[in-house]
Image (cartoon, rainbow, N blue to C red; front, side, top):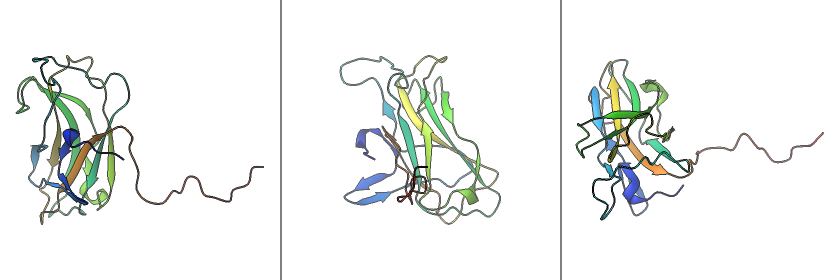
Length: 167
């Protein structure tokens, strides 16, 4: 999976080290990075980047999450007219609200980047973390997220074992 630094939403990569964005408090937290779709020399033109070839948001859980309560975590891809993601905000796509116990270290959560339609395309894109019910504790809520062309799962390839027979 290739990661373009200009399309990273949360966390950072330095050499071979991947670091996550810390998100622990209940409520909404925006990704550390916001993508500006206007581009150089194009003014305030908004683009619906969800049209055309498929894009994914790869969200990696950097540490097994902990909570003193029954915390839930939801991931939302949002768009807005301003870089603070506060004016004309639309949720393009979102996941379920996962129980924190389902999000262990190394888990990759795929989020397909859908079209903005029927909403009007907005200039700025961010990822929003929605922590519900209880806060995440012990600084474990660390997430790395980036826009990717193809989502690459980790782990064993259990779907296509070698040595099979065609009957």
